[in-house]
Length: 183
Image 1 (cartoon, one colour):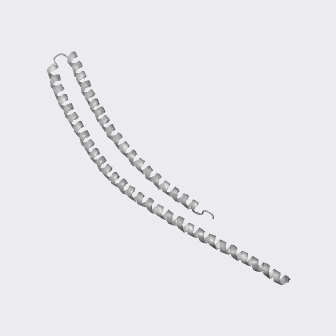
Image 2 (image 1 turned 60 degrees about the vertical axis):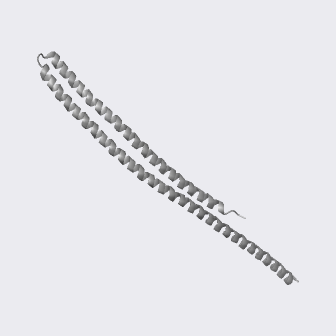
Image 3 (image 1 turned 90 degrees about the horizontal axis):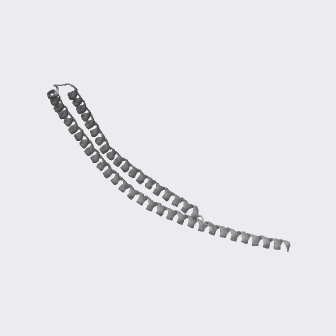
C-alpha cells in the first residue's frame, strides 16, 4: 500500500512552522520597539543633561567676560555686580524652565510608553490565544485530512483488488472460452 499521507502531513507541518515563525517574528518586532523606546528615553535624559551643561557653560563664559571687563575697566565693579545678578536670575529661570520642560516631556513619554505597553501586551495576548486556537484547528484539519486520505487510499486499494480479481476472472473465462472453441 502506498503512503499518500506523507505529503499531506509534511505540508501541514510546514504551515504550522510558518505560523509559529511569523508569531516569533512579531514578538521580536515588538521587543525591538520596546528597546528602541527605552533607548529614546535614555537619550532624552542624556540630551537634557547635555543641554543643561551647555547653558551652564554659556553662563560661565559670560561671567568670565564680565570678570575680564571688570579687571580691565576701572570703576565698573558695582554696575557689573548688578548685571551679574540679573544674568544669574535669567539663567536660573532658564534652567528651571528647561528642567520643567524635560520633566513634562519625560512624564508624557512615560505615560505614552505605558499605554503602548498595555495595548501591545493586550494585543499580543489576544493574538497568542488566536494562534493557539488556529494551531489546534489546523491539527484537527490535518487529522481529518489524513484520515480522509487513508480512507480514500483504502478504497483505491479495494477497487484495485477488485479490478485485479475481475481481470483474473476474465482471464479465466477467456482461457475457458479458448478451450471450448478449440475443443
